Image (tube, rainbow over all chains, first blue to last red; front, side):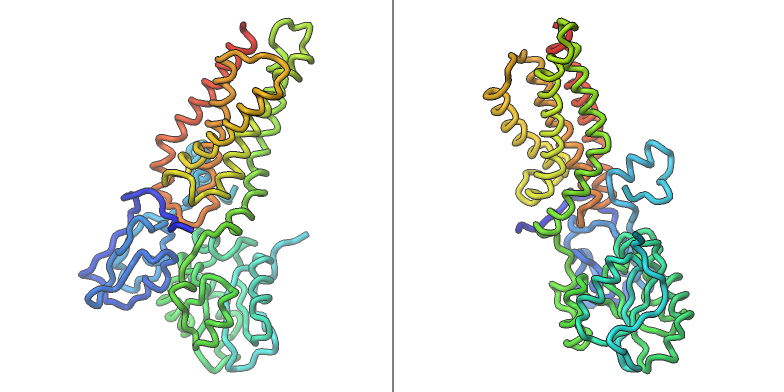
Length: 92
Length: 308
């Protein structure tokens, strides 16, 4: 099974190496191996593998990571376009 | 039939003060799945109120989250039940759970467990250590295939309505006195084209996802639609009882392509690796093309089939 990867260069993931304390929690929680440790600090290894789930940003104790996470599905975006806001239960 | 379990504290296989504490959502499938994969391991299970939604979806929404976890830990009085101070949260709960904040509110340290419950026994046996494979969310064939029924159900909601509309529209070809004959000999092929598109987008796309061309799901859906279009054209050439004009044939193939591409795009919602930013970018181009393609297809069907 080939590695499944989505569109190139769209993920909004950003990491500040100055703020990073190298705790490694972001690496632990990422389900797609987007981040890696280098010189005792985290950095983005494979940006295109990022699905913007927000696990890393939520768990960074020093808020070194930002990402625009949201309901990542076409139907939810369509619902928002049609109704002006995501419905209470945006699951289809 | 209810698919939720009551939130709160549970124990499996008679846990004692040293047993691990696991956390899950109050979706029945999540709860039963966790219990099954624990086999005979004794454990405490804290069930969060996620309104019947599974861990990963609920984490994305925030209901499987820090405040709910803090609340349930306080209610359960875990500090009086276990000697250790660790709770194991499934890794896919991480989008909603801030481990450092849970430490502050409860005194318990969050250890992230493996992605899959089936890896829990090995994880626990290794002293709560996960391998890189345990920390990776894959999307293998079995997991893609199991989504097909729900994708078909979603497509069927408007698919059945459109089928009736297309069938009746086919009857409008001249002479109108032969309405029902035309509906069967012409309209049924239009309906078959519709369903070829649905099969392309809702069945082939999930099954063949990694081998379909392109990274965008609308492109993969389009490719699957092209396969179905070939099959359809072949069937039509062999089995049609009436001749179809070029416009009509083009309309049917375009319909297959547009629908398969749209349903391929819809599959992003069920996938495990698409980003919201990517989906938005894809939609900006794909949605107008799919809607436009569908409309042109209907116009071609009308020109070729009805207005001749």
